[in-house]
Length: 120
Image (cartoon, rainbow, N blue to C red; front, side, top):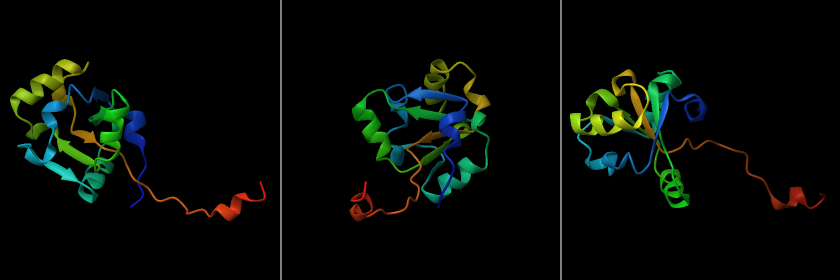
């Protein structure tokens, strides 16, 4: 499935990886967690302003997030404790957002052969 990267450019807010540590590991999170195709569909269904993106703070956290499957967590399903932590890290009130996005979109790109570059 190919999907636009609109939320990386138009997200309503971003939270640094370290601040979002309460969301990890997502498999153990007591909240509505959507991954892979379900996350793509949920993210496509909302405007970027309604999404908080978890952003890397270093090369290591960028690598971790890049290898993480695209994940959407419903804000309204988070515990009060996690909401309070995240709310303190953003300018707007946490309840004004619908989803938190973790991971990146993986999209199709054409395969290239090294032979294509021999004439360059």
